[in-house]
Length: 104
Length: 83
Image (cartoon, rainbow over all chains, first blue to last red; front, side, top):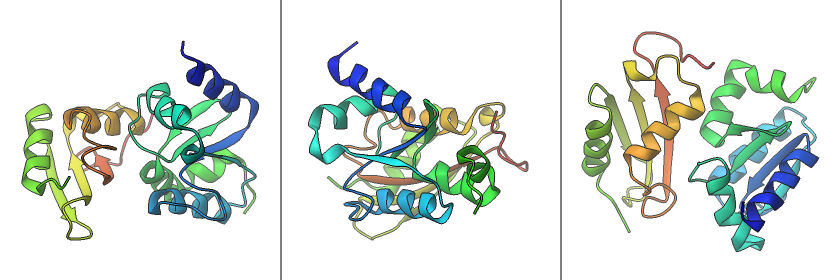
């Protein structure tokens, strides 16, 4: 297991809800990341974000970690949930709200 | 590097022969697409797995050569099966 992958594992397991994204929640640097943040905010979820643009190892490593080629990526309680398209589908069906346990 | 919608469709079709594919060029720049892929082979797969199947059909281009692909997958005439 590479350094980046064990670091990612620690982040994923240490935070109930964590979004790997480009930019920050306040200043997303990509439309897909922006959409992911908007969904979590809409749900009133408490979440952490990791800006992959700050760390090339994490940016590459996160793609290998879940065999998923794109960013953003959402993890809830250590499990990979999906990218922004899956988040949107699950938001619309109400599943995401259940998963993140938000009361919104 | 832009990619033609027809090329995306061919690659998906090669890997998932029964797929019904609709592709939209979102920005008109050959770099931002939305695709809807419907296939019986998705039945019983999680959403993650369905998307991974399409990504793998595109052979590593998603996230690289193909910057943005908004993806929607489904099983014909049924709700997407998620577990």
